[in-house]
Image (cartoon, rainbow, N blue to C red; front, side):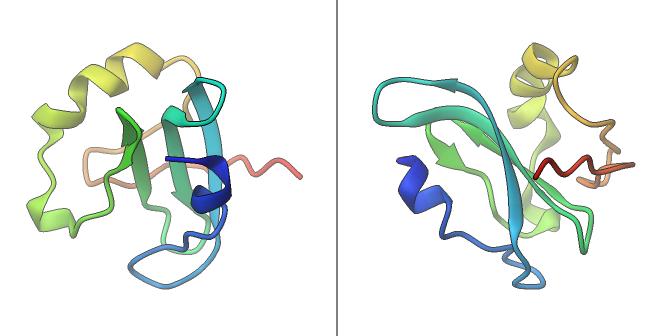
Length: 91
C-alpha cells in the first residue's frame, strides 16, 4: 500500500489518528510496518503491504507471529490482547 493511502487511515475502533512506523518499503509501497493508536492503544501490523485492521476477536496471533518476531526490537512493547504497553509518538 502506498504511503499516501496509509497516511489517510484512522483507527477502525475509535476513528483517531494512527502513528505509522515503516519497517520495510520499496520505491512506491510500504511492505511492512506498524500502526499504533494512542487513544485505544491498539496496534495494527502491515504485512505484505496489507494493514491488518480487523476486530480483535477475529485476529490470529499465529498469523502475525512471524512479523512480530522479525521486528520485535524495533516495535513498542506489545501485549497479547493486540495492545501496546507504551506508545512512542514521534513528531
